Length: 203
Image (cartoon, rainbow, N blue to C red; front, side, top):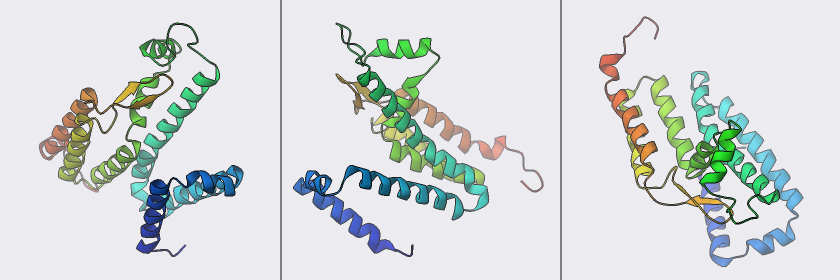
């Protein structure tokens, strides 16, 4: 719509002001939730469409990769909301626990992946999108660096690490070693791509 860097700066300043003053409840009182959700939905549609329209055609897989963590986070949110709405775990066994994962697995739903992607999903989305672009452009050193950064963030517990609470999953800040190792292996593969990949005409 023609806006530039100042628009994002003003957005950041406004949201910071809301967070520091606790005035979100007043805004929610003035603006009906129906109107706010309609605006957010429209903005989401426009941004998603623009992501495909404004990027090179061969980068479309990177756009999709960037969307997947957000979709996973939404799926995890909906699953947890359904569990709370059904009042599952009303007995001595807490609803949100490893036992719940076992119930999902019996239904062939591996929900723990969505729970892990939910934590730090914005960082995951940016990294996966940039990583995919680097692979498409055959910049394997850049891809290795992005994979290494994801491994470091996972090892610090800032991505993919969650813990159970009474009625939710939350970021735990404990190392997500499985994810960190997976990203580290990816980085090693990209670093060795110079010797593993065979150049072909047109590729």
